[in-house]
Image (cartoon, rainbow, N blue to C red; front, side, top):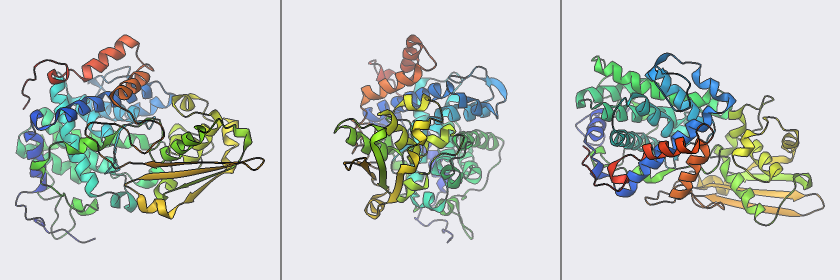
Length: 467
């Protein structure tokens, strides 16, 4: 790995300081109306995921590191310290693998940035929360995009690496830090972010849903250190005689100076229509294409061949004997088998018993293959082809060309190229209400939906300038 010269792009100011200036300088008026609305949807979507996660038996994992305090999060029975509240909220929101992601970066910005902001918001306005989220997403997404897919292929999950930095920028905006302090805090996060090994994800480890929360905690602690005057160095990103953080992240460098950013990466944030790892979803959608040609009984299936890109198959293996939730949702084999067994794939599949004999009996009949043509399309597309051989000689085939990296400012809000219609605004609201009903009654869910949108220019009132 080659060290990056301090001013490789001719910039005289350290990147940490330029990121701080962006975070503090972005105005609400700099965001298009569509992007302002998208931030509200982003917040509501994650809150729904948190509430649904809180209803699962696996929710107890979110509180293993809990410490008492005054911060209340949706779905939690008691107050927590800000740091442990951020871990818990992030974990709850990640359990169903239904949380948002950024197509061009391979990261999940929601489960680092939103918990950090929510757990430090105190009595600040929703407009301030929205702007902090917008700042955090832009920083995390730009860094992730600059390193995608090289960082993933090098063995690190981008969510925690880039999310800790983005969440720190978000907190700087929320807490109105001065530029010097925020630059120190961002440098601290770059120095100390949790480097989540991709191997943990491909091993389907049950601790993996916590890694976004650990990054959110890192952001809170980075701000505390900076407020105490502690920093990791002005040019921790750029490096010098030794590699900087951009080198460690396998970054190609930021294509634009942060002062020009206007929330463009929000256009590439997608919401998941179903609960599963994004790398399992193309195969499920290909099965949707098969179902469009008529129902299919699992007992009639002799063999299933799934052809897809290599990264998907890193996660593809069947679950272990205990069939833990994360193990199932990351598994191409389990999601395909569950879908074919039940003739549908949605939240009801997840709520069924973890081990179902009729599902596990399909495992030996499912065969996974790398398609080299599909490999060349990743990460712009997430393709999959499912071929089913039936007893008696029939065959059924379905294909999905999920447009994972296609940004859209005005929607739809889930990836295109699918047989299930992508989510529009009404679809995102429907998803939120479905998830929220796991923990709230309809009136409470409606109140939370309205709270997430409680900004004047989203409620039909005259917009107030938000600096």
